[in-house]
Length: 476
Length: 147
Image 1 (spheres, helix red, strand yellow):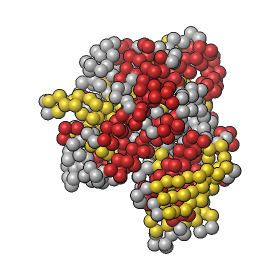
Image 2 (tube, rainbow over the protein chains, first blue to last red):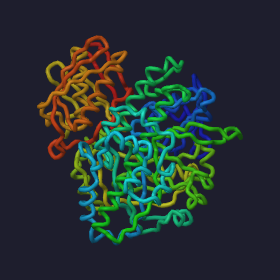
Image 3 (cartoon, each protein chain N blue to C red):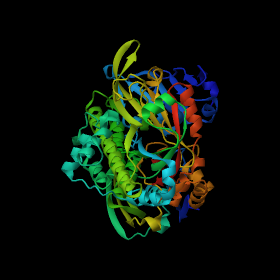
Image 4 (cartoon, chains in turn yellow, blue):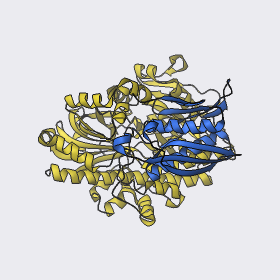
C-alpha cells in the first residue's frame, strides 16, 4: 500500500482522511511491514465503506485485512439506523457467521501420541469434509425452521452437546430475531443435507497443542495450560448462508437506487436498516447465524463421539465460539452517548473487553476469548478482548492470518502430496479428500499469523493469551 | 499441474488472480460463448473439467436487468445446481432472449476420488464483474467467485 496516502497515528494505527464522498475517516490497524504488504484494494475498499449512509466514527480494517468483496476482509463498520444507516449483505459476506470454536479435552498432547494416526483417520472418516460430502442430519421443512430459529440451542435440544456448551457461544447459542420465513426455499434446500459438515476452502478441524501461554491470568480463567490438547473447528453456515448472501446481494444491488443509495461498488450492496429489504435481510441473516451455530454444535458432538471411541478419557468442554462474518446490534459509546448500532464484522472477530454484560459470568473478569485461526502448518492463537478495544473498533480484532498469495499462485508453487509429506515429517497429520485443496491452502500461501496477532496485541485490539500448534488437521 | 486456461475453437476460458479467491473469465465470438466458457472456468476452479463426463442434462433459466447481473445469476444458478444435485458440469449451451437466459448444463455426480474437487464455490460475486466486447470484438464475461 502506498503509505503517502495514510497518516500514521501511533505505532500500529493508520488513518485515511475523509475525502470525496467519505462521511468518516478510514482507520487501518497494522504494523509497518503489514501495511506495506497490504493490497491497494484494502485502501479502496475501506474508503468505499466510509461513503455508505449512516456510517459512524470510522471505517476500520484489522491487521489481517485483504481484498474482499465490497468490504475488505478484516473490515469493521457500524451504522446508526436513526440517521439512515444501512445493513449490507456484502458487509457480512457469503459465509454468514463463519467462525471458530475451541474445545478443551481434559487431555495433554502426550495422551494423543499413541493413537494420533488412529484419531486422525477416525475424525476424517466421521466429520464430513470437502465438496459433495453430506451430513447425517437431514432436516425436513419443520425441523429446518426450528433449527434456523434455535441455533445451537436447537442442536443441544436434539442431543448434540450439553446445555453448558451454550453459555460459551456468542448470543448463548441462539441469535434472537431470526426469521426463517425470510430464508428462501432455495437456501433451505441447499442446506438440507449439509448440517454437521465442514465445507472446504480454509475450513478445518484441528487437534492442537497449547505450546505457549503468554497471559497466566487469562489462560487460567480460560482453563488452558501449556501441553493441553484442544480441538478447534472453523466453519460456517454452509450452503444456506451462501444462498442468502447471493440472493440479498442482488436484491440490495437492484433496490439501491430506489433507496437513493449511490454504490461506489455493486458489491457494497446495502439497504436502509429501516426498509423492507433491510429488515428481511436481518431476519434471514440471523437465521443463517443460527445455522452456523447449530452446524458447529453438531460437529462438536461428532468430535466427542470420535474421542469417546479413541481416547475415552477425554472430557470435553467449550472454551468459546466466535463468529467472524456478522452484523449485530450492539450498544456503543458514541461521543459520550450510548447508541444502538448495527456493527458489521467481515472477517473480523468480536473482542469484547472485561466487564461486558454479554459475556458469561465466569469470563467477565478478563474479557472475551478471541480465537484466531492460523494455517495447518503454523499456529492458531487465543487472545482476549481489552477495555481499550471497545473504543478502538467497537470491540473487534483480526480473525486469521489472511492470504498473501492467490489460490492460483499457490497451485503453481506447491503439490498437495508434498505439503502433506512435509507436514507429516514435522508431526502434523493432514487428512483431506483433495490434494489440490491442500496445495491451495499451503501454509506458505498465508501471511505470518504471528505478525498479525502481534499487531492486534500491540494495537490493544486484543491481548495474546496462548499459542496453539496443530497436530492433526482435517481439511475440506 | 491443473489447467488455468483452455481454448476450444474460437472460444476460451481462463482464471485471473484474486487474493483470497479466484477470477473466472470466458472469452468467445458471441456473448453466449463467453457465458458458456465463464461457466467452464468456474468448473475448473473446482476440478479439471476434462475429468467431468457430460452425461446428465440440467435445464437452467434466469433473468436479470442487465448482462452483468445476468452473468452472476447464471453462475449462481450453476452453483445452486452443483450444491443441491451434488454434480459437476463440463458442457454448457446458453441462449438469450432479452434479459432472459435459457441454458442446458451437462455433467455428472461428484466422485470425490476421481474428481478431487479442490473447493466448493460459495457464490459468484460482483467483484471484477464485466460483460463486454474487447478491441478484437470478442465477448469477455468475467467475475470473481468466492470459495
